Length: 177
Image (cartoon, rainbow, N blue to C red; front, side, top):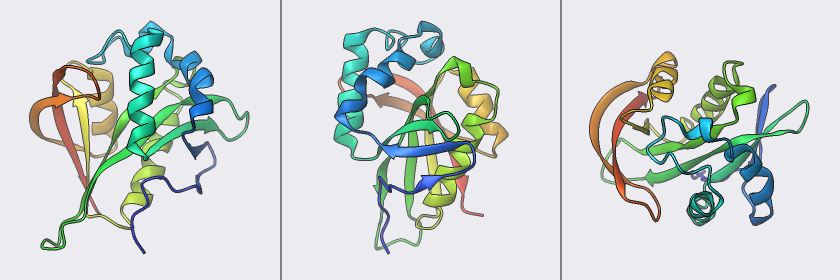
């Protein structure tokens, strides 16, 4: 069994992850158009339609992006993705990154992010030993959230987002239990 970056059956009692489709743009942009969602993000202008369009194109090209929906209301919550799967046959350590995540403000502080990360980590750890996260150096909200679920900061480096200038990010790691 190999790691599928975009499985179709990721669901728990709170959220469902659906492979992102071109037709999801409008519904996802409705969530992303809130400037406060991007307030601490390295790209603070992602709430603008043309800037978000670039993000969305990168998500589609990644072949690992998901539309996040509330399982009870079917409301669009946000987006996340798997990327940079490392299946090094000469190593016992395989890894993947989880990131490019954003969640609408209506869902902040209500367990959605934690449920998302648990769902994605549980799936990933069936195939990999390590999961990494790139988080903007000034995205304190995301740093605190990822630390709450056990991630440890292991590095800092410039990350070049799809079609954007590189920005300083912190690298966080969670190792397979």
